[in-house]
Image (cartoon, rainbow, N blue to C red):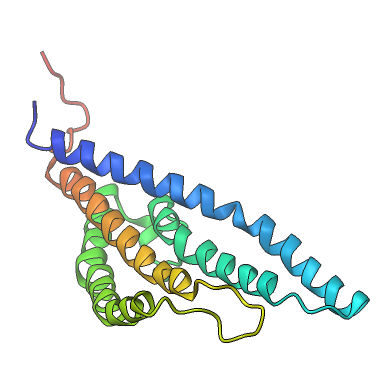
Length: 180
């Protein structure tokens, strides 16, 4: 059993959880389309305002993007502005990715978590509701999506780092070498 066996199992579990969350949140795009269409038809065809539905669409929009961020990172679907990266070896890519996680992603997540914790906690403490008449009664849940983003990205970054460090520390087989 290698040194990396249990951390890799935990990292794989984190990746599975983030993939499940991402896939579930991605389905919310269907609700976004249908919900927005209903709001528009109700407003302009029937002159009826649907504030609760409009806010539900807004909540789903937030959850679609913030709930799928870690899954996008896991799949490499995030924005990468690096013209050299595509030509790097697997080891150099692992070094770039681990440096980016350590120097950019983790500090950003910690900063966002630190600064949003009080904002979300205050909303929960007062059970904040919509300021709109007929709006949804659980604004605190929408604000909690920020912490979902932070938590899922932090966990995904840690899982990625485990796998990247394993890749960096695993010896590269020499081409043409024979093993007995």
